[in-house]
Length: 160
Image (cartoon, rainbow, N blue to C red; front, side):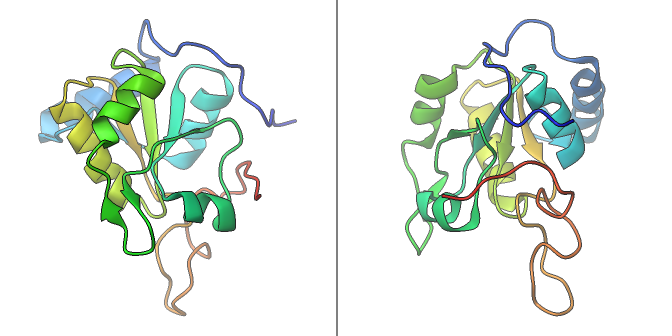
């Protein structure tokens, strides 16, 4: 049975082997952050307490669309206009620290990639983007969640 609330830990120390492999690929391809992780692997590592999962969506998205139980929240952008949060890197450091192994999650994987890049530029060396995001890409019918994303893969999430 899937554990719904990850074991709280300070996710630092040795990088999990799966992430080390992803980081090697990222370095070889010139990715400006540690790498990109599929949602299923993200949940596996998070539920095992090996990483910190940080949701970078807005407060409104988390509240009305749902979020991963036990995840941290540091908004990359705020409000309905998604105005860039100028304190993102500072808030991320205060909330989880630069030494943590961090997986970032947004709606589709785009904002979290930008957030990972900003964090890496600020000295975070173990920050990864979660591919597909929470809701996934828009399908041919102009809907999210029907072809990929955290919820599509039936990974744990809750709604307020």
